[in-house]
Image (cartoon, rainbow, N blue to C red; front, side, top):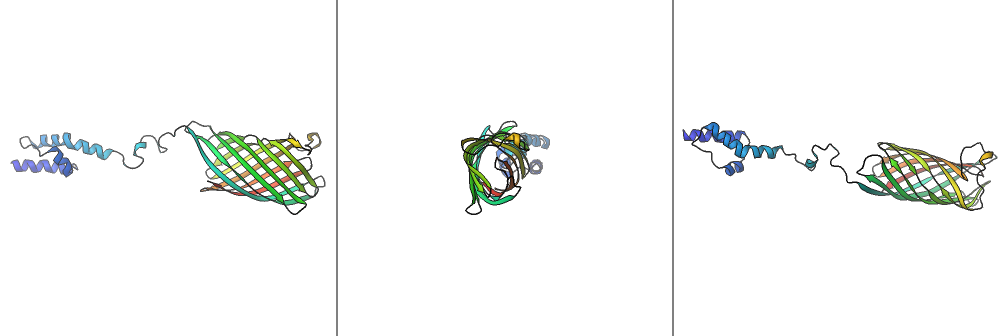
Length: 271
């Protein structure tokens, strides 16, 4: 009879998933109690710790259970990512004669994007950057544009704003269009959007001359809308491909000497 009681207790333990280690830790079942009581002792002493251990979540994200797929809340602060964006394209200019001239452009933009994290939307982005661009189509058709500044603005889930001052130096000579060298202050304002890897922007950019002999636009004598010494309309779109950003930019620039349209194509890298 004692042997049958021992076999019954051992069978119950095996059926509940006890390992040899668990049985050794609990010790041999008591032979002086009924089989039902022996099972109760095993359940209290060994089965519950085993079940508890098996129920614990496993894997690298075990600690995030109950917090949603996004895991624990990110600590509030700022993260940064540098970038470099080579640009090449064409610039088409027209004056009062309605004839147009085309010139090739090439340059690059580099900077660092600082993003707020760990706080409710909207989150701010701040981007100090520098940009240089040259115009070239022969000895009599050349120019350059260089600027440095900071763009900043709030960002919601899919849309945002960007604005800020840029100091620049600019000069261009193309056929009948001559833009004397000036130092100026530009203030671009843009609306931004992004859905997945696809982004776009539209905006305006007034600018004022700080030094130089170039005349500003007389807005009372032009059909275009704008303000400042010069004015520009901005638009563009881009697609992210892993750490690469491929895009196109369009700029319509209004000056006292004429109007120019820049088409730029870029393939930037997020470092």
